[in-house]
Length: 301
Image 1 (cartoon, one colour):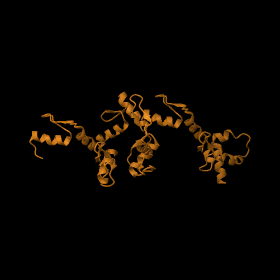
Image 2 (cartoon, helix red, strand yellow):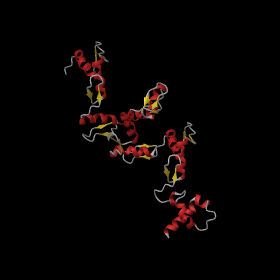
Image 3 (cartoon, helix red, strand yellow):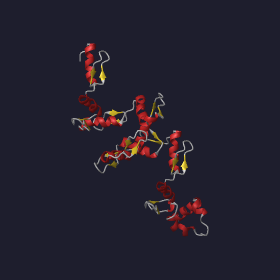
Image 4 (spheres, one colour):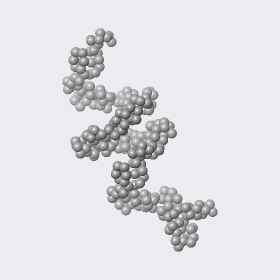
């Protein structure tokens, strides 16, 4: 009886059932076919009766099928009235507009950080939980975000499908190409609301803000040391693991830090980029310059 009552209420409130119920005197007679029809509330959980006739993928709602087909057709009927960009679905347009409005309705209940997309909040939380649900099927390495896994796989394949039409440089990910193009245009659309400094990439703005906040959200799970950027944490961990991923292509010597490799190469090239501002003598490494200056200052190490 409770089920019939709920179905009756749904009949009254669902316009697609109410408006298209002509010729049906008994609502219960519609129950079975409607379970396989448009309304997800009257359909068995997990059922996907709408298949794509192009690729075969199935959907639980006809709307989602229509939206999916735009992948094949390239149709983007929803247009942003601010910048003119087009999208295949209204939800994508709504999310995009938050770039213009600055709205960030999704908040992390652990650190309070806000996001414009729920997906970004979900992946952000992996920083706190340490969860890495995306695994490379080639080497087994795990990642907290799927796009990091995608980028990682290009190490194995060497693929760089995104090419700059200005200089011809290629990139493994489209957003890397977009960031690169700011070099050519000089565009710096990301502004610090504290000091006003501008950046060509949002991640650089985020990193910059740690100067003001002193925040160090990345923690080493071995020794507990904290870092403002994830890349610093990654490099730091090489101390514990002994990993030396940076190799000299001239002599084969390996280093745990990329800047150590850079300074090492000066041995082969003869380059001496560090100059004494007192006597003009040049050095291949900065610490050699520091030691040299003690001659002028009289300081004893």
